[in-house]
Length: 392
Image 1 (cartoon, rainbow, N blue to C red):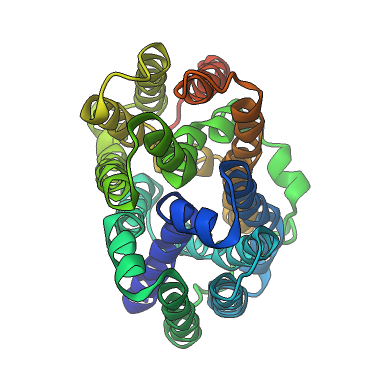
Image 2: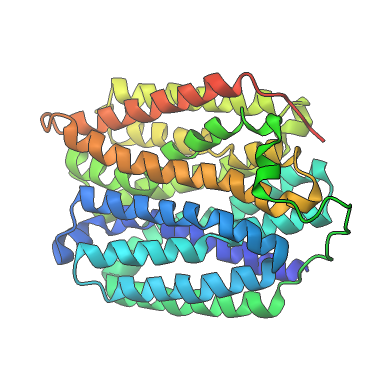
């Protein structure tokens, strides 16, 4: 069981890598394929939307087929195949197709591990285990920063992504061999449950809006906008952008791990999540107010957004506490659908915000994006404030 979970975490590391690597590759994709910032924003958004669209089928598969087959088939075939399409791309449209396939391939790995945690471990341990998984998996953000920039410049971006396709396929095969499905859920007389049963749980509804907007600023900025922002405002190249994205990625790792045990330390999940997200709003407003604060001042604020914006495992634990075992797979994937779907939707809207903002001065479009993320996150916090706290 532990070795299988370790490979699920490795699969999630690739999920984090693929959702973030466009920021570093943006200069070479622009040069070789003519992919502009708006094209890459669409590709990034399509990754998240494909990931989100798969959550409901993945939830059904976890509850019926189990995490082993669900994760192995999707990551190996769709994830590895999508990376191959990316390596062979000739136009931005090929990048769009590749990101859809990769998003679908990455869609089950985190929820498969959460499903196992929810079935095998206590509810009180869920947030810590979920946070640790996010923290370790978020190392993929680090690999998708300066190491990716170095590999792309040393070996070429096509060769680098082709190697990633091979490794992704290998991890998928390992999941099929090593992951162990938990024992079947005993029949409680209420059937297997359905998505409708999940939606009938009132405690979840005030959590969903914050999940929809919570991860979008960190994922959207780290996954794409950091690259064009530093290139346009500070004249940064791939290596300098890699340094900034590396700093933000490290902060995201720390944030995911740090949020995990805080509910038990302070005796509240709601209070910790609300305070962290409001602090993230403050950092985004600072970036909006002073978008030319300086290379490292902006980098530190972006790192703070990454640190504070990783309350996802805590929010997942909050929502998971309302689900009975028979709908656990559908429940956690519904929560993930809102989180990842929110990133996809807001990322695509952010591209329109970027296009609609004045082109001069060069920081104006990015200030508009910072404000957009700040206001949507603030709205999510306002609704979440009415949620019912729960630690069990």
